[in-house]
Length: 264
Length: 357
Ligand SMILES: Nc1ncnc2c1ncn2[C@@H]1O[C@H](COP(=O)(O)OP(=O)(O)OP(=O)(O)O)[C@@H](O)[C@H]1O
Ligand SMILES: [Mg+2]
Image 1 (cartoon, each protein chain N blue to C red):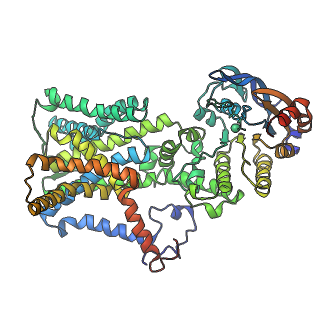
Image 2: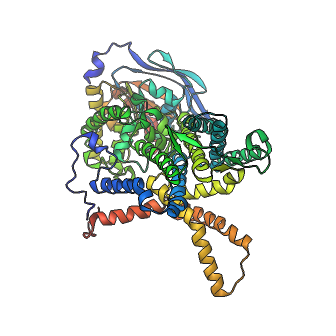
Image 3: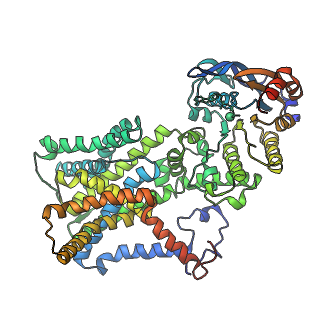
């Protein structure tokens, strides 16, 4: 966990201040205040339906909070559209895969480069003189990530035909090629076996250590989070139970209760 | 067996993203291209003007519509109206003494403006309502053409297309018309081929498949859908102008009725959504269908001794377009292109059919 140690303690990449989100009468998030330091791996845990995905949807602009503020890099981004938030260097993966069916693995990952490419009608019409050099340049970056995540053999396959574990990796690759400064992963290890989980944990650590990303990791399973996170918070029924370093959070009486009381 | 993929290795990203990475595909395209270029020397005047010329023009129009439906996933039920705006604009512009090249661009721009206005309205609603908004465009344009004399020339009027001069050549012969249509089809095809390998094409497909996933990659779906409407309408407008100048040589509202919109839709869907070669197939199929159908019906009614009225005969193709659209959407959304692809895949491994690819 060297990454966080070198960072200044007050260097906050993300601040969520008193976030509230309702769905009809259901309070999915109530008064959540958290912050994520630059260069750390930040964990978010909680039982099913505790509001983890809702938190991410609030941050990435899909379901803006009804009250509260979200500040990224010192800039208030509350209520901003997802495609604009992406341009600020935020990338995410989805809990239930969101790959583009019918496209190859390669094309899916290339889409992760969108914000760096500025694709246009003009560039497409004059491909040989305009778009080609951008395509080749971005393709090189994509191929590096394909190597990094060991996706070479699946590169040209239609994305929906490859195994689920690989699809999760493709989605991670698509997020990584955007070279985000802030990477949000919503249960990237769900449905994986122990070996695949360990691989994924390795990739997450490498993404932080080698690419310098700040990572927001949602996990259901405590073992992974406690193993790789610098700090974490626990949610239950939309409320913040505890925050701090993993060993304190998992030992917190309310967290123990939520996890023992719940199905997990 | 000519098709072998084996032994084709690309060692850089430029050749890997070539339009036709497999040599056989490349050579068959060159052959087709050569056939297209030398068609006037090979085919007689009748085949050229009654089959090849309309095929080229309608394939170009179908491809333009396919960009919108097949790539961007936005249905359009009034595409004939988009084309009519191009046709009328080009006629009025050339009658006003504007050079034909510029008139073509104006035709595209005018279709684009009107197309985007209706498109933007359509995009605010979803599904069935989108369909209705584009259908509304058809009826609004139809109404304007028949009720505004300054544009349509008065009720049931026909405006003659003046002589055309393109890039310094006076185009008056059948061969000339053919080459204009062929050249335009080539441009449209190249654009769509390029779309397959650029971020623009990928962004359209991403928006079509999962707009929320696209948005977090930074793709502004409203912008890209609008651009799809704009580009498609532009190309549709130019196609309309070419249809009027190279094929009909005059323009009347009947050339662009809702029936024509349905035919275009059938070309795209029967040919294959998002398939380039598919639109070529689709256009040919739908153009040949009425003739084939009439022959068939005449034969069957003769056989059974039935009397079939002219009226019924005239409506039969429409019935068939409807059946084809629904049938292909339900059972083979990838259209004739898929059938072609199956044959191609089969040839690619022939005679080793047991190996999967
Ligand atoms: N779009 C929505 N509309 C209505 N209710 C929603 C919506 N999204 C989430 N909820 C509700 O908000 C609550 C929190 O859901 P959320 O998906 O954030 O949980 P989670 O912690 O991610 O759970 P899981 O571990 O199952 O992924 C749940 O009760 C859920 O039903
Ligand atoms: Mg969730």
